[in-house]
Length: 148
Ligand code: RB5
Image 1: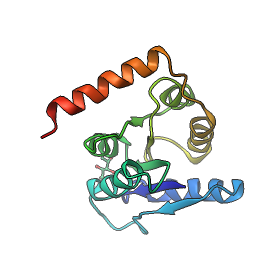
Image 2 (image 1 turned 180 degrees about the horizontal axis):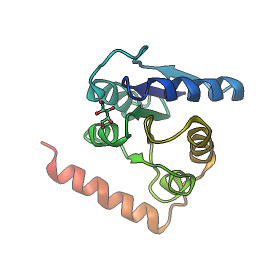
Image 3 (image 1 turned 180 degrees about the vertical axis):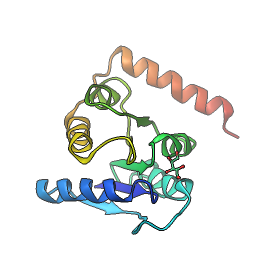
Image 4 (image 1 turned 135 degrees about the vertical axis):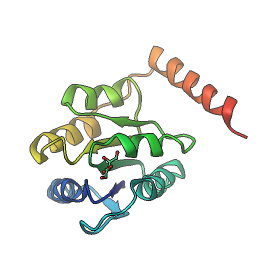
């Protein structure tokens, strides 16, 4: 189950991603927002990040105007590795190297065709483990050092 979230800047791209997921028969839970009225992206980043961190959902996709605010906010939740990407190579590497459990996209940056390709590559990619696992473990150590 994929957790989806967006602010007003990402709403339309979220809807395009939902269309793709529907076509592929991939299950998702939409945490909003549900229109183009101005909202605050951290509220939706938190909902999706908590759903992923608690394993209610396996992975998440967050969309704001740039994808930047969503990634900054989602990465505050322990266990989240949210990757902001603007190209297919990065989206794929985000899973293969970083085991990113949330993909953050910019609705004002990335068009629906490219975004869907990025989502597809990220969803279908496999974490490569090995030296990448060691590096992710080090990220988790940083998280632990600063959590109360
Ligand atoms: C909202 O105007 C915009 O700041 C937001 O969608 C996002 O781009 C923040 O990073």
